[in-house]
Image (tube, rainbow, N blue to C red; front, side):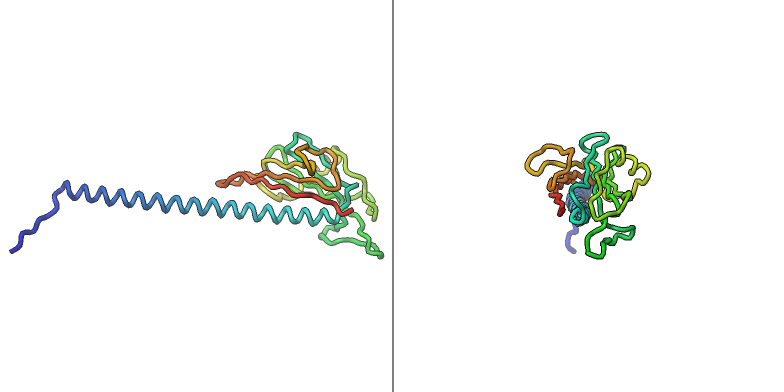
Length: 203
């Protein structure tokens, strides 16, 4: 009969320790990979949502007119309240006269609440709908509008929202025919997102 040598207790414990060490290392690698994937996926979702919302805003600006726009910062340079007139009815349809000219129906207001970190949008009726762009809302009128009709949340985790000159970092208080809108998002479990878009009025 051949001699059968069994493992000693020390050898068994040593083997088990090595096995557990390998399992811990593999588990750490898998956990790191999953966290990285989730973080990148969250960042991609935030970027996709941001691009969609900014694209919608740019589409609306093409229907607006620069003389109807206003920029105000009730509580600071990071809390832009941006308003402009649109020829849209309550169903989002463009209203035109028989000659095809847009009839301005409402003001569209996008703003960041200083008390939170969300970007909102709301609409406020134009006093007298007309094919001529209505006058811009004053800061007090904008405040009254967002107080009476807070509107809907557009984006969350918005750290700042402001308007800049097209060729410098000067924060604008008066809209120009073209300028930059800047958004900074702080999505959970993802790096800070900075996004700048050129806002351009067609009229």
